[in-house]
Image 1 (cartoon, rainbow, N blue to C red):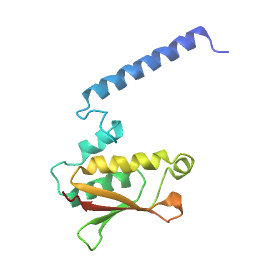
Image 2: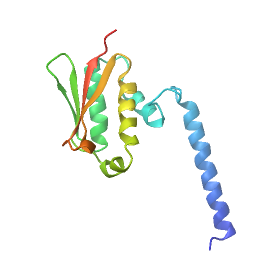
Image 3: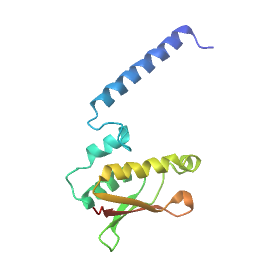
Image 4: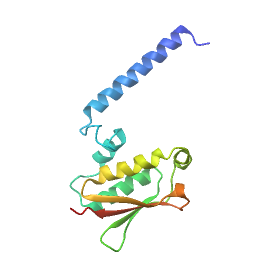
Length: 141
């Protein structure tokens, strides 16, 4: 049975966590109403230079995703675009149970790469492919 003291300590810890999260979110320069820009999107956008070329942004995104265990790389696709490749999925079991993770990831990439890029998933581990591949092209007006 939980003692009253432990229960109150738990509430206090939760209140501090919520307060800290609120302060952090209030400092985020990007509104959370923009799709794919939750805390994760904001962190990625802060690490990836907005003025960098599409190739440079993809390389920076690949570096971050590799740090997270995705073994990411960027290759030219031969038609002026790029292939953003994730050779490993550290959340595969969770993504299999809830495909919302994959949808959110695609939205996140579109947001982080910006309106000047078109992003389309062409291979998907969850669909039986050996990796996830995204075709990234400069957006056409």
